[in-house]
Amino acid sequence: MTKVRHGVLPTRREDLLARLAEPRTYDVAVVGGGATGLGVALDAAARGFSVVLVESHDFAKGTSSRATKLVHGGVRYLAQGNIALVREALHERTTLLANAPHLAQPLAFVMPSYHWWETPFYGAGLTAYDLLAGKAGLGKTRFLGRAATLSRLPNAQPNGLCGGVEYWDGQFNDARLALALARTAAAQGALLVNYCRASGLLFDDGKVTGLQCEDMETGATLRLRASCVINATGVWVDALRQLDGEANSGDGRRSTKPMVAPSQGVHLVVERDFLPGDVGLMVPKTADGRVLFAVPWLGKVILGTTDTPRNDLAREPEPFKEEVEFILSEAARYLRRAPTRADVRSMWVGLRPLVKPQNDDGDNTKGLSREHTVLVSRSGLVTVTGGKWTTYRAMAEDVLEKCFDKDLLPRRPGGVTTHMRVVGAEPTEAAPELIAHAPGLHSYGSEQSAVQSMPGAKRELSPGLSEAMVRFAVRHEYARCVEDVLARRSRLLFLDARLAASLAAKVAAIVAEETGLDPQTDAFLSLAQDYLRVPQ
Ligand SMILES: Cc1cc2nc3c(=O)[nH]c(=O)nc-3n(C[C@H](O)[C@H](O)[C@H](O)COP(=O)(O)OP(=O)(O)OC[C@H]3O[C@@H](n4cnc5c(N)ncnc54)[C@H](O)[C@@H]3O)c2cc1C
Image 1 (tube, helix red, strand yellow):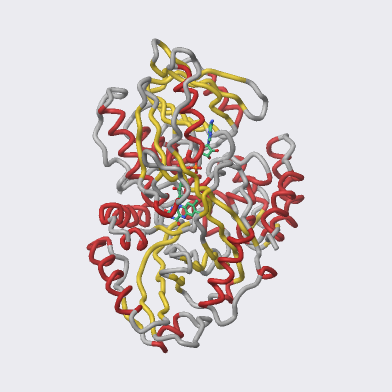
Image 2 (cartoon, rainbow, N blue to C red):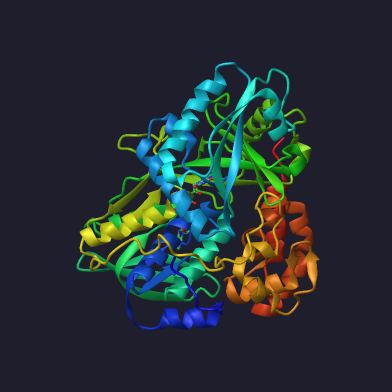
């Protein structure tokens, strides 16, 4: 197991910007600080390449903080017959659980059956899932009788219940894993800067040789030179591809065919008493033929998700009324005491970067591939999108392989991140379970003592959030405003938007003291309102 031990690195913005302004040519410049870009930055830095990454907003502000929180092989893709995708994801599931045990853990799921044939039918599929996992299996699939199903899912609808199947997958804290990847890449020498947008591409003789960037806090612009530029901007990849196409089209006007068909997924968060017990619930086939989950997470329950085509690429997409109705009505089919709109504590929407096949109008996103795609343009711009969080590490390896194949980088051996624990993952005592505990010190793994050494360790703003954690977020985790702290460092916005709003002023005072900047309190309060506004 490779250990990354560089102490707790500071993330002072002045220092990061001073490094960014140094005239030099990087081996790799990554655009986008979600799972995909961070994975590439970490892999490249771990192979000894010089790496810079710019993120226009906060790390994981895009899709990568809005997952259903599953580290999974994808039982649904098994049903679609995509064995290779499932096998790779099951392998990556094990790798992720081993490298970030404080942020990613195994979780059992129960699929309740209401027709006699469901247990043998789905049970056979889930047994195949186990077999595919082989040594990477987390626990054996078990067939449950009615009583055993009810004891595992005490709030399951008992009317018509025949039995169930229990199987294993994993769950994780997505935004905190993204931050851990960023900080692990930094520990390997990469320079990562959030709130810095790639506004243009630089070319020499028709080849991409760097980026034009804008510091989103000051508006200052700067140029970054790199041998290899990676476009890892999720659902936004087509904007940079368009700039690339225009620059190389002769008349400057050629439009590039979009490769992404975005699809939105809504999640509703409710109290844990709607899903007591220590398992998640999986609905194998909803009315529209999807899989739906109820996942116990950080002391609450996540219900989701949906799959609705959406093309406006909003930063904070709003849920459609029908999506909320769909989730609540499906939950009511399976739960004895079902949540209503009034029970929703928070609600968030993520955009899937699904890759369009040729000649596809993107209207039916359920049928689109969940696999990732790496494209290298004529000018050498490398674009990667699609895939899922669980497979971010394998995607990064594929991206570097493509860069070697196209002679953008000298070939260096891979597999360097397979056994690399992320920052905070050095073994302490067994990590507390993500399902049972609200956010708190446990999320910091082996960095708990570093957090506790900050001023304000004894001053709790709310259970699980101390003044010291806010200071740590600014000094060591790149946080710049209230939203960065409450949405992606502590996760309270995603768990209980009302509680998060009530803490905004206290968090703001600490952030302002640390950064000397406006902590953007009003913008956060308005966002928290949006996370509570369930469409009627
Ligand atoms: C509803 C939903 C549920 C999901 N659930 C799961 C799950 O349970 N498990 C799982 O494994 N996967 C899940 N996924 C998939 C997974 O979340 C995504 O595949 C993954 O997060 C995509 O990461 P990304 O880095 O490609 O995109 P993003 O996270 O969106 O990152 C792209 C980044 O690029 C930045 N950017 C854009 N333009 C620029 C620019 N010009 N300059 C600089 N930066 C820029 C953006 O701000 C953004 O942060 C889910 C996805 C959705 C939508």
